Length: 179
Image (cartoon, rainbow, N blue to C red; front, side):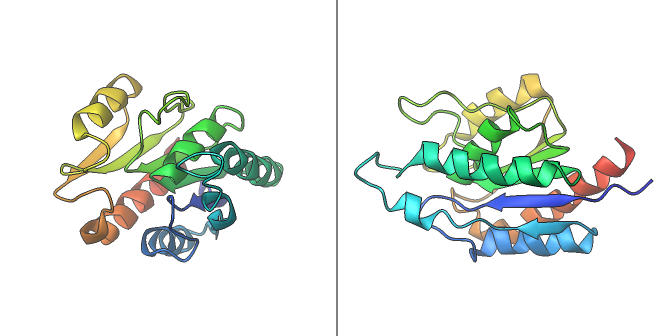
């Protein structure tokens, strides 16, 4: 049986829906027969009056509304980079997706709750040389969740591993066929 559905791909802080990584993930999703959506959070990122990372809770609410709507139509996979990974994890606790894909996920973000993830198929791509989120924190977080973890020779932006990230996302989607 072939499982297809809808992927919601959330960009990182001070990035945008046309960013290289989420664009590559959208193409990977379409290659597997999934539809893809890339919400725009730039208006919320600009809210420096709320926090150094903009309005994180409004980001979560925006993604939650989109995920709930998509879940009414069928399977949903949430994916995100950095702050987009953080909000994808948070939303996964309320709208259980078919899978979760996190790139450079922040395990801790100041006073906000630690990164969460529903117990669903989980893949992570992270840079060994991530200057914002130590790789060891991600490994320790991923281990009890039995996440599929790809550590690459890159920094927080994962800019030299866009293709590897898209391939890892394709593998996650393919693994859902047999789930």
